[in-house]
Image 1 (tube, rainbow, N blue to C red):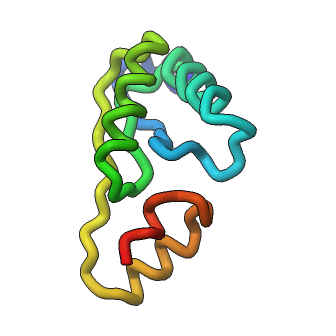
Image 2: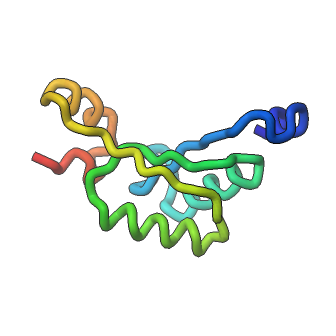
Length: 104
């Protein structure tokens, strides 16, 4: 992101991933927020979250993101359920403790 911003300024918009329930590989929730802050400081323009189905987790995460000093827009990644097979494939990639797999 820094390279793109240095080379092209604001010609490109850069979106980065956000994880309201924490990234599966993150050591902690706090570390994940710090990593997001680093991505924003590197030049991100907008955050798009992973899919989620628990609005309370998203609302808390947004408050934590803002408390960390991150002010760019946040777009929630909500995946409509079109059929069980596609939902199952997507949620199989989630952390087993994540609320995104507890919908059924």
